Amino acid sequence: MITGDHRNTAVAIARQLGVFAPDSLALSGEEVDNLDDQALFEKVDRIPVYARVSPEHKLRIVRAWRRRGEVVAMTGDGVNDAPAVKEASIGIAMGITGTDVTKEVADMVITDDNFASIEAAVEEGRGIYDNIQKFIHYLLSCNTGEILVMFAASLIGLPVPLLPIQILWVNLATDGFPALALGVDPFDPDVMDRPPRPSNASVINRARIQALLLQGSFIAFCSLMAFLFVFKVESGGLVRARTMAFFVLACSQLFHAYNCRHPLKSIFQLGIFSNRNLVLASGLSFLLQLVVIYLPPLAAIFKTEPLPSLDLAVAVVFSSFPLWAMEMAKALKRRKSGESGPAVFQA
Image 1 (cartoon, rainbow, N blue to C red):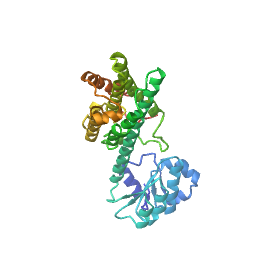
Image 2: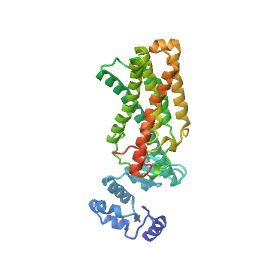
Image 3: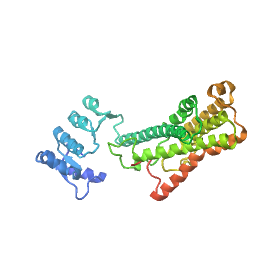
Image 4: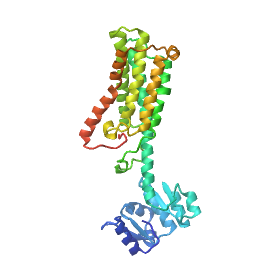
């Protein structure tokens, strides 16, 4: 709390707000003047209240916090707040009582002058960031599966299980709609219970790379096993085997989209239909996949042939493997951590 009011008034308000502990310090602007920048840097984490301060004092306080590596949000409404608002990591201006100068230098303007709107904005930002991660994670894990199935087939001397045009179709038509639906996934109710992520945190960290490889391996395993089932067990021919691998690859990625909604919570805990956009997107992608296989003009273009009912049943079983495998992995993680966990992959 940085205010121009008297120190006693500021401390009384801070105690009511619960931000002033018995061992906390409250400094006046004059006392801040008596501290050099290094002394202020060392003490700033123990000073929750500043009274009778000038614009220069506010600027020094913000700089001291930033020197400590903290993400600093500064709220203000007057012209004297503008330098500190501009210096802060996130400058916040009041929309009703704020001056034009402060609004111009601010990163965010609270249109209703309600401090609770800041919390709502943080929640919205965290939810959007989580959904960006889900979007990226889904596409990268699916692409990893496509790479691994081609690599594994060549490694064990099998014919190419997927044609380039089939992979292109999966990337454009099958992956695209579920990925967009994940981008508008409902926010995790526990999003505000998590501590802030480090300012230098990467979207792709070690834990995420491990998850990408594991989940990509599940997808590749499904597609390759489907190819082998038709090509070796049924002796159904190369075109039919490729059709099976193509169909299972696409469907396993549709199942996998539900895995990406949360790294620890079960899809049944989240609710299968809680993201209606994802249900519609996966349904549309599934229908498009059937059209490519069963509509003769498209089947000729994509080098596919209609699958018999037995192969379709086997395809559904193979395709659902990534979902059940990740459900078991999530259950083990929950048992180990004893909680539902954050909606991001932590390193």
